[in-house]
Image (cartoon, rainbow, N blue to C red; front, top):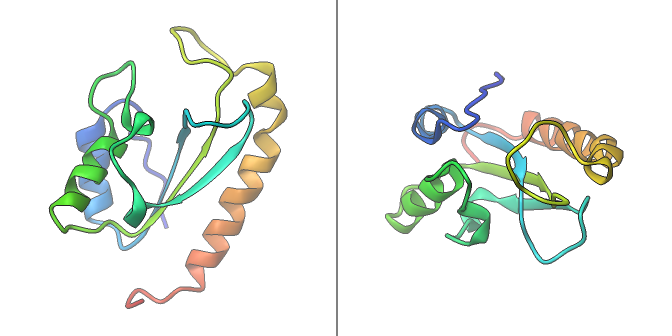
Length: 121
C-alpha cells in the first residue's frame, strides 16, 4: 500500500489509480448534507456530478467517472467530507477540523477492509 498525493494534478492521480489494484481517494465533497458529513462512495458508482467539479478545473473524480463511462473500472472508494465552504484560502474550517477524527477512522476502517480483500475479488 502506498500514499499518493495527487492534489490538483488529476492526470497524475489517474495514472496512479490505473496502476493500482485498489485505491482510496480522500477529498472534500459537496453534497446535500451538513458540513462535516462523511461520504463513502464506491468508485464503481461514481458519476459526473457536482462532486467532480473543482476550482482547479478537471478533477481526478471527473476523470474516473469518464473512464467508468467507457467501461474501464478503477476499484476502490471515495471518502470525503462535506466542507463548510470551498474558496481560495488555506486551512480547514472549524466544523471540518472537528470532524477529522471521524474521517480518519473511516479511512482506517477502509484500509483494514481492503487489506482483507484479495487482489482477484
